[in-house]
Amino acid sequence: MDILICIDDTDNLESPGTGHLAEDLRHEIEALYGAKTERITRHQLYVCDEIPYTSHNSAMCFRAAIVPDSLDDIIRYSQEILVRRSAPGSDPGLCVAVADRIMNRDELVRFGLDATKKVLRKEDAVMLAQRMNVHLSEHGGTGGGIIGALAGVGLRMFGSNGRFKGWFKIDESERNISVDMLCSRFDIQQVRSVEGTRIPGDGMVVLEDKVKTVLIDGMSVLLVKQVNPGVWINIKKDELRKY
Image 1 (cartoon, helix red, strand yellow):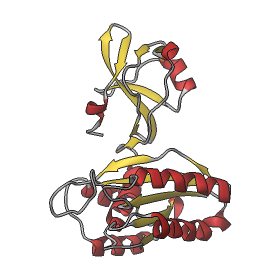
Image 2: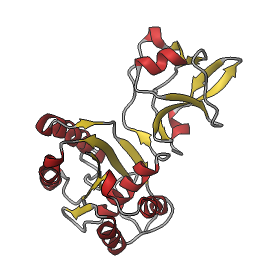
Image 3: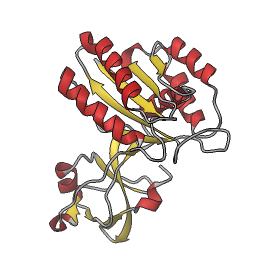
Image 4: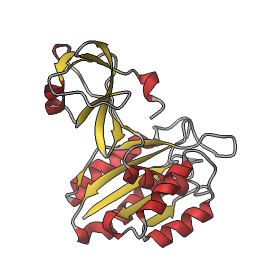
């Protein structure tokens, strides 16, 4: 059974970010329930004065393959983690969705996309979750994190929004590498230009700065810019902020 787990608004300015808690939750679910998880994606939500957030207003989501009988236990464990480990003053929200039980995928995706550009209400999130047949719960404060948690699941399902959490550790000997070697060496499924062109396997990539992938068409994609014929360079941290 494939599920999506998303958490939002678990931190304050002094605590580790929501991404750290999501990473802990992901590994603990693997260890305790034998789940096979995918990397976490960070989804940037709308930023405005009407929405309380710690620093960036982003939700953290990951996919997991689980034994069906463990679903209820995983939900309870995730709830306990948010109650025990969320920072004081935060407004934690949890969403757990079974991929093939979602009643209307397009409506959930639309909610996620709306959350990137306008203010949404808790009441709308609760009603949508009920219609979609997904778990949605709040665990402290105002519980406003349920909006981002539900939106994050929708955006992960959309498949072309967000950045994968973490950076790849690159040895100096790997700084000049072919696309084929890059994809076999790291969790990178495609290399694409910022214009959307897929770079062939024999294309050469110069890796500079920190190396991070984004979620495009449901894949882990490294975005690059051409510097010479057949030679590409990964885009930098500041350029990744739009994803």
